[in-house]
Image (tube, rainbow, N blue to C red; front, side, top):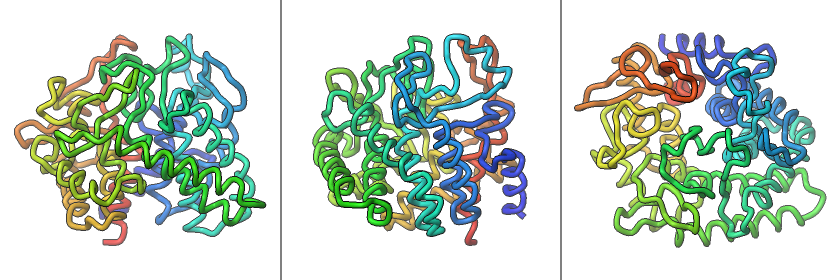
Length: 392
């Protein structure tokens, strides 16, 4: 039975502390973004994974400014390799390493989702100060020019150049920092809204609620004007240096659907664009449209299909009432599973045929001077598919 098989694979990635490692054989350690999203996917199935994830990430939450590790007060880590031998590959970084723009809002989102599911007031009280500090990071360090948008620009010249989920040590996205990546604006809005909900239970007065309401409204009001791409009836991938828009049709705007930041009049247009043939395939939504000049079906982030990426879109479609479209993504990933015999980190589609990137086409990672394959076990891919089929 598929559910049982996926549960066994998830157990292989579970740590003694109860959170999920990102993947195997690569990334067999704690990732902020990956561990949070996989725990979110598991909340309806096993909410304790979310609790354990929030607990360890709160433990290592940023306290000071440290350029080598890119730590800042309130920031949630990108990755922690502990004493793993792979740390030797990154002599110019310090662990825990904080080069992630989205781990911090995701921390708040998952905390609220966990509380909604469990009503675990005792635990939320334990991490309430961490939630406050995370939202303060968004308002202060995440928005250094105070234009309401959350941006990243690496502090360590050896750190990650791009720091959203399509991250890289090089400028593969061709966007000059500081970068306001589109999906993170939605995450930030959702995080502020989550903070507002939690403040009803855990705040002593209305000051935090009022502050976060003001921040959320300012972000939403600025977002549509700055990010809407009229020609494509879609959203830009990002705003680059000097607020120049990056015109690339990508899967990233699909992550906005769950957040509440998209106005009603733009929702139908966003969904319609996601399902055009240049980006939607019978096995899922590509990271980048095949019409993009940088498109490559086997590229790590420039044309391949990522199951977790599709899950976030699927979740948002369901939340926004697009049940038929959500079902199309679910059936696409099930088709991918049947073809591959697994649901890996990523895969390619060429001429409507699925291509395994776990053992077939390979990615060359210049930084490591070796060939990197897609993980056959990847927490947020497995948990995403399990979430989709759990109630079947």
